[in-house]
Image (cartoon, rainbow, N blue to C red; front, top):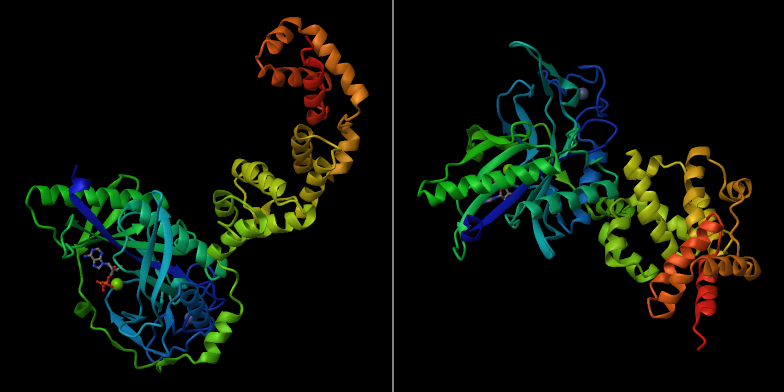
Length: 480
Ligand code: ADP
Ligand code: MG
Ligand code: ZN
């Protein structure tokens, strides 16, 4: 197997659009969308003589990300011009950072294929986004400059990633961070998070890195995985055939499931980087870093561990409940209502996540507040209804918006817990299933579930299953 013979070496360059209210170097709105070319000005159109002014909010958000990923924040960083000629770039250069980025030497811990790994982050820097080419029918292309000048952070990893699964895990974790920090919506399809992948192979045990290629245009998790897997295959076939790897940049075509060579790789000197003369060095003092740190939320890993320690959740449940901050917040509010982490966790994991999946909505759009859901769980805890009825009440709450206790009253779902009433049902079930009773008493104890089910049916789902369980055990006990 080629995959055994070679070790894959992967580094990612991820661009995240910052959700600042205005663009990075001008006062135009930076929000996604809008009629083409309605959010532009001389600065983001690259008109001669227009001067950039740095957006403070973009710097704060970039530093917040750097702090969250354990980076060192540079006291003085320098914007640099990256020169290239392309119609979506009206200045003919991008304002980026080159040898003095804002954040350096961080890391993200990931888990993939049951393996925990630490992935180094070489740098995070600020830059401006380009406009968007709109390819019309025939040979016409239009350009929308609304996106031109939207702030981007570029996150560059060390070549520490070893597989497609690890790359996807890294990207998932990074997306979780930017969402927790509230600095980017992390939407790959919409392009607010964009991932370029660098890949090379080396013989297992070799010391020197192989020649790498780059893949762009990977705009879903699926595309990231398939693109990497295809490229590993392609490179290993070439190496097996004794052919050299040439440095290329390829595009992933998700429709055709193939890689398309785009251009030879450009080198840093092709861009003729030089310090941006229209912007002074960016000086970040301790006070500014403290300001960025001040509204730092509890980060995903810390929250997950706290859920395990404080609420006794399993690692798996804690992981799922903290994927999104809003879901974690919902769970915690629910625990405040019920004082019962276990049943709250179960209910969110099974019922609420199931509901979100079925309807394709997010927890923020979910119609029942933690208070309303909490009332339902309290009815179960206090024995007013059983779990089966709770499912029915929950569906009814979702469609009618009524409070749980009103639905329970209206539908007459109060649990039957009177042993007298339940005893009658138990006797009736025993009398009606003589054969099963004999088998049970001969040792087929699994039949207990069947008896309980029969009595439950008789009660139209309202019987208290715990009490049924006790009564059956008592009355079926062989007295010989
Ligand atoms: P460039 O300036 O050409 O973009 P960088 O040094 O910034 O190159 O590296 C870009 C990305 O490529 C980083 O994520 C880095 O980890 C990764 N990378 C560097 N060398 C290799 C290699 N031999 N194989 C795979 N990835 C690599
Ligand atoms: Mg680069
Ligand atoms: Zn502008």
